Image (cartoon, rainbow, N blue to C red):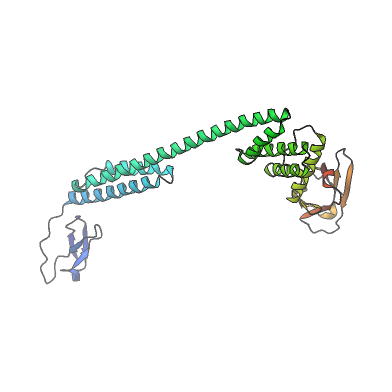
Length: 331
């Protein structure tokens, strides 16, 4: 075996005798190193310089850190959260000791540029957010002020001027509640002017923005029209518009979910909670506005298998339904 040190990084290692006189790559610094021995006398190798090797490794590490600082600084334009990463790598590179003087200046310049870009981009981001927030707040204040003026005009019966304001903010309102409020007012104005189809269209848009919205005007005929349009819109979307309650001795053991409307059918999913169909009795009752019974239906099933849904056919007018009660008891 031939033992020797790398002349570039002073790394010590051994190689086989048959490599004498040849060149190999140092496993530490990857420089090409001649192996002593062989038939040809190797050239004189300089004495290892550990200080130079340490300086080279420190310089390479600092150069990598400064490059990362530059890269993350540029990426801060797309994601401000990368700013701390850029600054950390920049500081590490600039505070690294024992660097090659010929390359230390370039490393510091890259670090400064990387950290500078990250800070500048974050300042720009915060500026954009601040300006956008201020503009949004100003727009909200202006909208609220205009809505108050429109309400005063509506209550005073000055429908034409109120309609012009509501029309604007039914499209440009800052959230769905403002848009729904404008559309329901536009529907009420159209109804007062005898424009029934326009009233229906506006009521339909209001329900589209907020399905739970309720009329806040006094005309009972307009309220009746709104309720009819609201129910029709919700039913066409396959959703229920009435509250559902579950009563009975097995209320906490048999579970109903995902209530929906399919055509002229009210449907729901059901989990029997370990019970068999021949052990329970389920009934559903539809009530009208005066708590009268529209439909009272008992579900009968004698098999032991579990069915995942129930449905109730309804041939009446949807607006007659005000609530549904499901009763579930042991037989």
